[in-house]
Length: 182
Image (tube, rainbow, N blue to C red; front, side, top):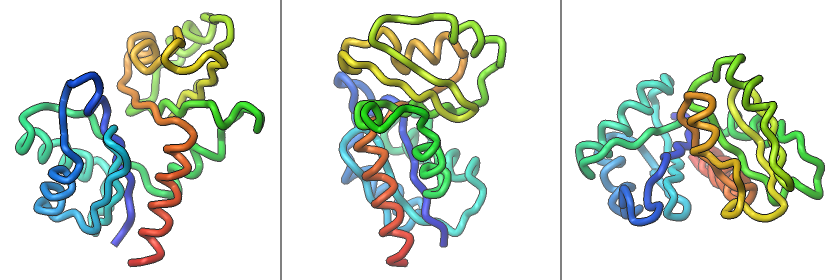
């Protein structure tokens, strides 16, 4: 039984794609996922499964949400080690890390698009694009930033979902505990 973290994109944001977390846990358990836990309302799920194919897990969760809630939600599944690697690779110095965002990419962006986006800059905002994540720091707060997940999705022609530093730490901790307990 392996432990996984699923990141759902765009649920419970601005009254759209509402998914009560208790219902999500119940329905995903009905679909065969084990020890399903959620963290906050923005679509973070820690679970266990004997399925080792991440694409199959993403599809299973996608289909379950569509079946039970009636809408499509992009889902990105990571292993605890994979999420830890993304977290550890953050290029920002310690004094900025606590206020940075990890925008995880569902697909590898085209290198030409990455180069084009890398030419754009705004005051008080910095980002680094890797194959699986955009590390983003904004000194004036995410809500006031010009760069955000929607911006990067449009420019890079890929789906992405962002989590802040504290959420990343919590998901890593929860998935590590879950892994040790079972």
